[in-house]
Image (cartoon, rainbow, N blue to C red; front, top):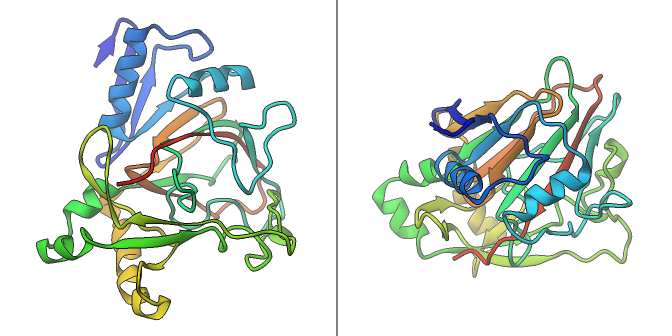
Length: 281
């Protein structure tokens, strides 16, 4: 598909499209943006290779999608608080995003999308995996769908931030681990409806989901464990290989993702922006 010089090439069966013929450092026409917007709804992950983007360029493109989020647990760049420098240095034993997750679902209104721009990528490794949660929901039995459609789950950020998480000593990106830190907790439907497409998607993840509402952790865990494993079955996934100066945008309402922990001797640096979303329903 093309819109003038804008070309969209599908690169994954379950998710993923590459868009070329567009320079994101320039203002997009409304027609161009409409095509890209529809492509995100159709393919869930969009890759824009060979983009020379300043922080101002990234922010301008992100704002075409909505207001920008300030992360509750990570500090942004000095002059650009909306941008998180996601960095892994040689010798780090951990990094951000090492478990399957939707971004920041502990918030009342989690981000609708995440944009990441690659500055330094390893020669080998450092890929990101995405899993289509429309497909995960559709593949469940009718009986399981009927049960899940009426459930909500409690989400919190105590596994990814704060003193109990104790992650700072293993990674370059730091969060507040002081005794003054307080967990952010919110409740969301286990199956959410995408506000633009109307499709249903599975909406639990191992990084943030704590338990089902009105159930104990022990009662919730067996079914949650099944859903976590089910959510990233191979047929639902797309594996993204980064190159330098590539911008990737994904739909946080329709996907879970994971940053592979397979490049401990390499330097990896990305710049990340999250776009505000609505309360899941």
